[in-house]
Length: 172
Image 1 (tube, rainbow, N blue to C red):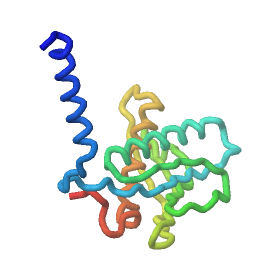
Image 2: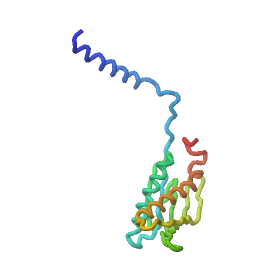
Image 3: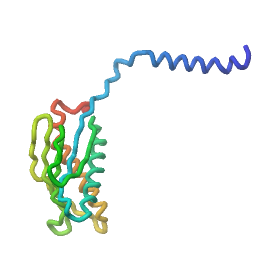
């Protein structure tokens, strides 16, 4: 046998193995990936306010994406911002943002009214209030990131049973 054949034979065997695997049916123990659900988070606020409101929206958008990724929900997330009369969506969490303001000494308090329109109809959660006490010399950017992370987690806790009435796929 020549050197050329000795070199080609392993590659031909490798390619044949790949072709056989491609034709083989999938293993029965592999579960089909769960179907994804569309979820829209609508951030409703007064657009006539200062430009810092975009700052809050951007942080909320990032926080919801990270929270859903952490939970491994089979969801396609859309985050939108409107001033009023947002279009209706099939599964929609509306966050009517009231602001982040100090209420007590050295705190930042987030307030928003939450509603969810999903498979079981419309649900009003009322006002979500989260109070945060920043560390000394903590930047506003870091504080808002932490506030929005907690707000996203609390909001998703509220809608989980409504979005997945039969239980979340893949949850043990």
